[in-house]
Image (cartoon, rainbow, N blue to C red):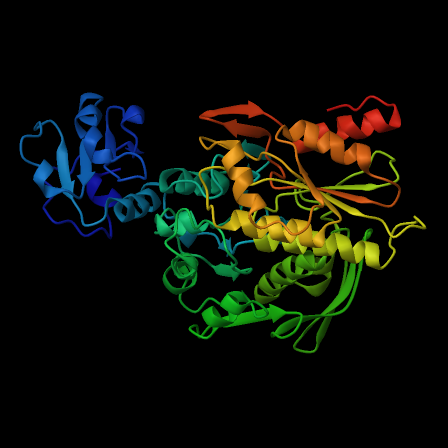
Length: 499
């Protein structure tokens, strides 16, 4: 592709000296090859401007940069393009280079603190039921046709994101559903994408190690709706969420959902350990929802998916069936059932609000005596907090866990470069009462929770969900909450657990 085509829509502060051929885009000098266009992007740890000469040495044909003082003295073997924002230029160039796929097929973006992953899987299931082959980009993995790819980021960098869209289109996908993280929006990874629908699930405290404050976090999310959503396309917004209502008030084209209020509402909710049954009402239409998913949070996730698909004129019976066949999402209120007489739940909850909702869902199950146990049952919660992340949420999660659970085991959860003892000390600042113990070894913490569980109890293992690693210092070691839980339950039952 000619350089001028790659740079379509990008404002240059200088002129293109040669309209050269570009066959590759890169923001990492190590990946540069002959014919590459290298974008000098400033990251959290490194500045791509420091690697311009390395990119040239590796054969870069063109360099996009935003620091004019660096132009003097650079080799004449490359074309230099000065822009105001290298990240924005990278996003637009990536969309151009890979064929502007979002203008050819609908791309549905889901953002919010909690519920993105499950909502994404639900929408994909509905579209698949409607006969629409659909790609998926999200936290657990990427789905390109029949191929499942690992997901290093919830929302990948612009080059990888647009490349995935192209691969999905080439594989016959005629829609894409993607999680859109606040990091991706703040770092302009999905700029240049024209979103057909945008969904807002909720907003609670998270990622304040990256964002200045909750307002900055909210404004990053709002970009999806105010800047990237296709003109005239509706925003799908949770009207029961405080920030959802705030966002809704600033938009014209919107469709809201909720239990308390909204254009699309859930009524007659029946929640049990076996799943959900409720109705959805919208403009005189009634959807009868039956889902194996459990808990109030999944009522909202189902509402988000149903509202999105109603706005796309998907038939009611297709929406009902698409929701019904989603039996579970890995690491999201995932039940580990090996025949034991207590319940074990694995969940990705790693924010105060998510942990609170998770434990309250478990409490609701016990309160309504949805187990066959004659006892009321106890909630035993295993959780920790990640290192090198928002420290302010740690005491909040300590308070929530000890206040709402009967017993808590505080453990390690990706301590990264922080001292696990220090992380736990922050959690302990918020604990209420003495119904807890600290076991740093996460595997032993899970085993202890399973060992102490009695008939009718619920063991919650929170924080890591689908993740299959522990990150200690700068290394990742294989670790799966599910594997350890299955082994521990197997030991209780005297059987071998296959992992």
